[in-house]
Image (cartoon, rainbow, N blue to C red; front, side, top):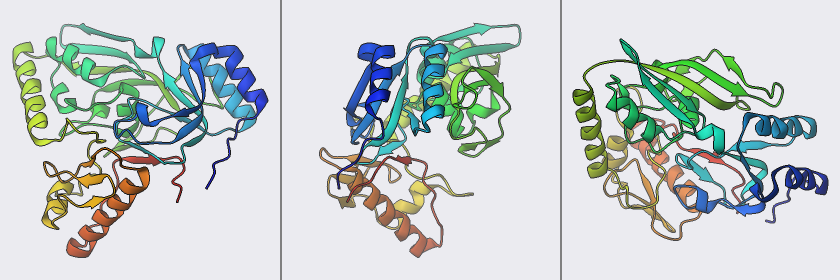
Amino acid sequence: MKTVPLLDDTDRTALRNHFGERAHFDAPLAPHTWWKIGGPADALIDVETSDELAFVLRRVFKRRLPMFVLGSGSNLLVGDGGIRGIVLRLIGDFTTLSVRAEDTAVIADAGGSASLPALCTKVATLGGIGVDGLAGIPATVGGSIRMNAGTDREIGEFATEVVVQTPARPDPHPIDVGWRYRQTSIPPDAIVARTTLRFERGDPKAVRERLQSRLVRRKATQPVAIPNSGSCFRNPEGDHAGRLIEAVGAKGWREGGAEVSGLHANFIVNTGDASARDVATLLARVRRAVEERFGVDLHLEVHLVGEFTA
């Protein structure tokens, strides 16, 4: 099935005139995702400033175009048919990261596209207690805020301000956020431009040791050397998705080039030539097996976006 781009010649001209070589059309998205899977975007735009982002958002609002923000490309399955409309990558000002120590706290001011691993390292160096709960998550700060990422501690516990931009209100403005397990109240069309996090200040040596211990454990128990997208399913209350998936014997299951990791059952890896359809089919097979065996309906942690062509 052939996909039909939604951008007309006027859209393309306006974007090309404003962004020059930072506007890419019919651009493959697979190189920009951790799974190395995904069809083309009608337009892939690299945005450097809040003013540039506001320009795009006004056009999105006026033309009622679909829009998607591509962060680090983790936790994401892009359909083989790609993504219609405009895909944004936040660079430049959005990658800024500033961390400072106060008397009793460590404060991090981060752009939406700042690296979460880099933030963790800098905060740990100054003794930010609890930052190890965010260790090893290969995400941007903005993506982590949107999904309330974490392990035993979630990023929402530390967020004191979240600033967003939306098509209806394109200039930066703060919002109140409701935090839930792997979810927030942030509107779907809101882009996290920047955020401030506050950590209680403790002993830097102890915090660094906890952070390093977590990173070592993740490396030993997760398939970091093979393309994957992190945990595929959320943990059900009182249990772990990986345990349930392993218990139904799913380790090693394959669909095309997609395989349930033998190292961690809640990871699906791309063995080299997996399609989005392969991964989606395997996700559905795993989910069905767990529900039939245990009566537990696993919910996806990975986000499926774009067109999943037959």
